Length: 114
Image (cartoon, rainbow, N blue to C red):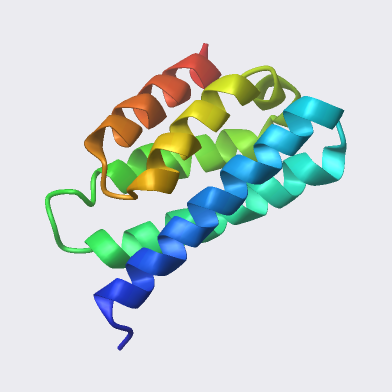
């Protein structure tokens, strides 16, 4: 089994990568940057799940999973919320366990729904 520090590091690196790719997409509009960001988001999401499985923080995974679904299944709508995605991943880039990041993730999910 992987060490929790290794899993936390993977989640952190993936959050940084997602933030970077989404920022590049916002800057240059290159679709590949968006999709690389989505892939990094997925990596972050899976690492976070492994990190928090069986804890009271595991519920945050639900927000991540819903956001990921919107990023993949409705990219045009999701791209219009790229600033919010960047802000969310920026918080989590600093600390993947920062509850403020998951509050933002919940808000992002709510924006994507409507």
